[in-house]
Amino acid sequence: MQAILPPAMLGILGGGQLGRMFVTAAKRMGYRVTVLDPDAQAPAAEFADVHLCAAYNDAEALRTLAASCAAITTEFENVNADAMRELAKTTRVSPSGDCVAIAQDRIAEKAWVNKAGLPTAPYLAIESVEDIQVELAPYLPGILKTARLGYDGKGQVRVNSADEARAAYANLGGQACVLEKMLDLKLEVSAIVTRVSPEQLSVFPVAENIHKNGILDESIVPARIAPALAAQAQQMARQLAEALDYVGVLAVEFFVLADDSLVINEIAPRPHNSGHYTIDACVSDQYQQQVRAMCGLLPGRTDLLSPVVMVNLLGDVWQADGGEPNWNVLMEAPNAHLHLYGKKHARPGRKMGHYTVLATDVDAALEQARALKETL
Image (tube, rainbow, N blue to C red; front, side, top):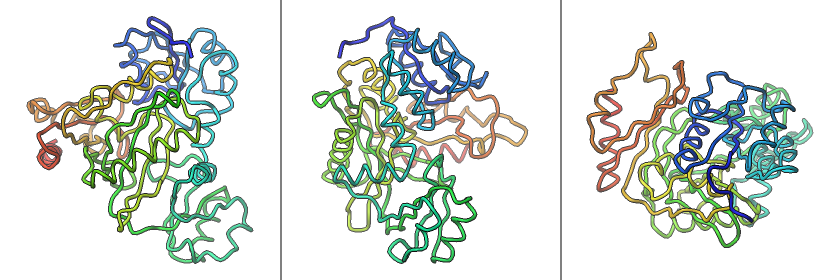
């Protein structure tokens, strides 16, 4: 694969906060960037060289993107996979439309994880009403999840009995779902792998993730697990990337069970919320890796420079009248870094920014990060 060098034009499908951080990384590295996003106020558009303000499946916009960009990527998995396949006929696209299609569909995703020889929670694929008429005891109590378009806890219903599961399936409109058995979890972790080729592959330090209401709240790095378990998570992420013949940045989320075994929860074919810490705490960050992978460059080093905690900032932190939080406390902390996403309107549950706290150990970083949040 021939390397794409600055000042080439790179393209990205999606202009949200992940796109914004991709654009800033690419611009620092000397590239130019075109963003395709239908939102006139897309956060990434503020820094992009070109903003194609059109739908993701707009044929003319896609032709313009393909004609003007040396390589194209995506910031989210719910982009049109067929559009990515079409783009790949005329320009370099990573990850591939096929990999994005797998990540879009929980049924396909779990099947691929198992095909790679890796464990998932016991699950039942439900693609018709007949599929849920079988014996459900092996998957209960469980979580019924829509196969497509679910994120941050959306499209998920906890069920304790077969009757509840069938009623929940009916309430979801009979769309394709998975019924996944709830496991006895100790904690959740994630590993972010960058793969350019079988010989060019690197994995970031494993993050420990704490969620609230289905949305990531804190990432703690290094994860408070045994080093051997962290190494196993990294190896499982590598194994999955190899099985998919993946090119790009791939986030792999794991459940750590009570017996310290690992199962894969889900994947994201892009940089991930739990990898924001890499911007401030690693030799290379996940967005630089995204640029490197799509350009056919050797992945950067992933060494952790300091223990770190990342805290998500949701619209809930803003004042009821839209007033800003008390940023003064964050700005006066010399080991804290604030990252705002440039979104114009705050609302509960909306990701508006994040901050990181770097310290000599994770306990100190976590204590300070939580104290800072209380003062916002």
